[in-house]
Image (cartoon, rainbow over all chains, first blue to last red; front, side, top):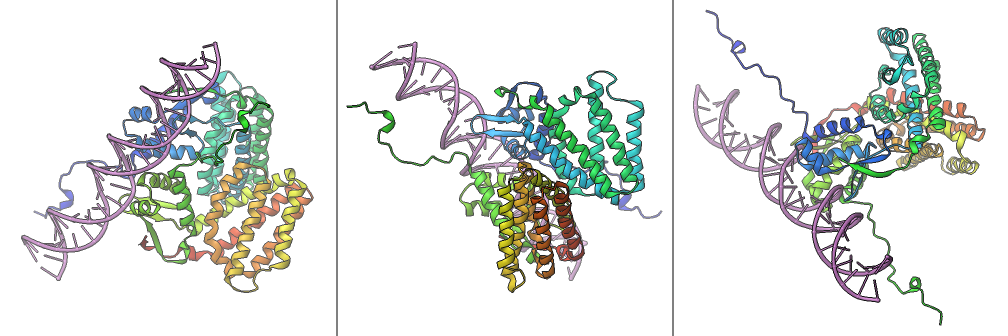
Length: 249
Length: 249
DNA sequence: CCGAGGTATATGGTATACCAGAGCCCTTCG
DNA sequence: CGAAGGGCTCTGGTATACCATATACCTCGG
């Protein structure tokens, strides 16, 4: 009989425990998800959070909640008023315009780098995604759901360019910006011709990537996004609506 | 006798208390200052921090220290290993090159906005600062102190452009990047001709601002900073030196 | 009725005790 | 001698008690 290797001994089949996390990290992720899922721009009242209630809701003590809130405050999602509560932040029009302006800078650099570095397969995948959306699911057919879908696809396109840049820092820095830009979904509802123009812009950017022309890709990406900034500047006054007493959760 | 107004009654002349702060915020500021003042790139060993010692040193409990560390970790200044300690982060060459690349994007947008928006007085002040440094204190005369001075002036120039953009978000986002870029001071020691070229670039950027040419200002700023990225790519291998057991504070 | 003062409550900020686990050192066994 | 196991120490992670203060409400006096 050959020897029995210890390696073949029967063992319990258990997955590795996730030791990379902590309550604070998990609270951060959960709270961020919950906060950014709120339709804060669709209601006049400021939403108010409270550590003790969140603590009860999440089933952990206040300590990890506080750590999570420290981060979320730095990222601009909430602001803390001592002894009064924690409020979910609505970005003003000026702030959103600034975010888009900064996005224009970062995306244009991403497009430049993508034109230099992206693999042919990656660029082809981007082209495929674009064609798929353009042929089968035009925006403005009907209803709100369609435009939400368009908006998601739009963000996905921008995120894909960032990814193609191969620059991790660009991805890190833009992640929260994309989230903050949920504020302007309301604008796109009323501007269906913007979607058609947007698709045209996207296609031209893809062509610049395919041609491996960094300067052109960069310029097109910047102009595309600066156009959005100008649009919000012109139509985004609803963002600066009255701020009233908050709703408590 | 005219009535005595309550407004003129004698009162104690006391300054307002600063209620905008907290131990956590003060610890954050103090720790950030201390950490970024360390010459981490000049020594092989990783520096290790410890909450309890910092708590004793700053004279507050661990709680605000932990909150401060949460932020400093997110900003890339430290990393926490559970039950092992908190280590001051050295950026790798790749990370520094990415930071500079992103800086190129942001500064070029800032230069664009500055050319459109900055007042004549602001642009003249920038010109004055540049002339002052160029005429009286040329770099490379002698010693380390001179180049540090140059490096500070270089950063000040870049920061001034960001400020002239009038975009608060650009200033926020670049603040920590400037700090992280202390890593490359060592490179400039050996490259005195880079300083001369840098001054030439700065002057041309100023001229573009004076001419109110956003596209030119933007392009010059981008090329200037991308040139630095390329330089670090070529000469920054020391950044990826061996990482050894940390020194404990 | 109005204004001032006092009290109670609620909430973020902080201190401290306790927990979990990683690493190191020492002891024991083969 | 080398390997394994146990115990101890140290450190970040967490829970909880306490603190400080802002606000709301009530009472009293003018």
